[in-house]
Every structure is written in structure tokens, then in C-alpha cells.
Image (cartoon, rainbow, N blue to C red; front, side, top):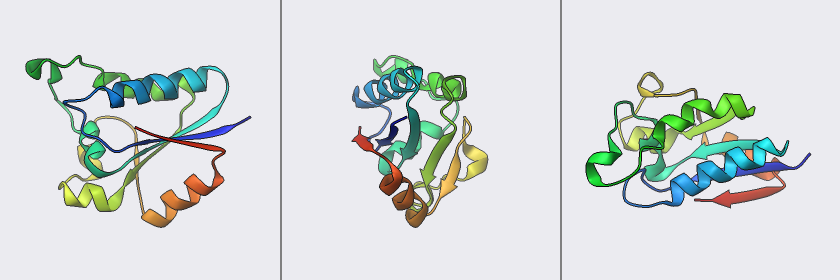
Length: 118
């Protein structure tokens, strides 16, 4: 089984790369790949509840992140430094994720066979 790490770096609004990354992660997991997800930089904003992307002309895919466990995607990490930068705490998360240090994230990346950044 291949270990795939999907890293989200961009804001949830104003681009399609996050939706593409989510589709890639779920598709990979459905083909029995071990998928891990990391949110860093502006991507930590995906975790905030009550977002309404349709108000700015984007499709609402953010609620789909709540379904990651249905695809056996159990490792969802949030860069602790990025979360602090945006004033986000674990209590703010809209779906299951774990705050992680840069060292923990680096270890996960090193253990992966493939790393894809969105």
C-alpha cells in the first residue's frame, strides 16, 4: 500500500486547487492508498466553521472534509504555527483534525511515498 501525503497550502476561497486536492485525496483513498492530509499556511482557514463560499461565487465543498473518515483518511494534521498565525485553535475546527508541530509534519512527509501539494 502506497502512503500518500496531501498538503493543502492555499485559502479555501478564490481558487480551485483545494477542491482538486480533496478530490485527489478521496479518490486515492478509495483505491486503498494510505492517505494523510496536512493543512498549513492559509489552508488552515478550511477548518473554520460556518463558511459560505457561495457568497463569493465559489462552490461549497468545505463540508466534504467532514467525510474524510468515511474514506479511512484518519491522519489529518494542522500546522500549529499556521494555526497560531491565523488565531485558530483546535476548538475552532469544523471537522476532525489534530494540531501538529513542524517536526511531526516533517516526519509524516518523510514516511510518505508521494507528496502532493495543493
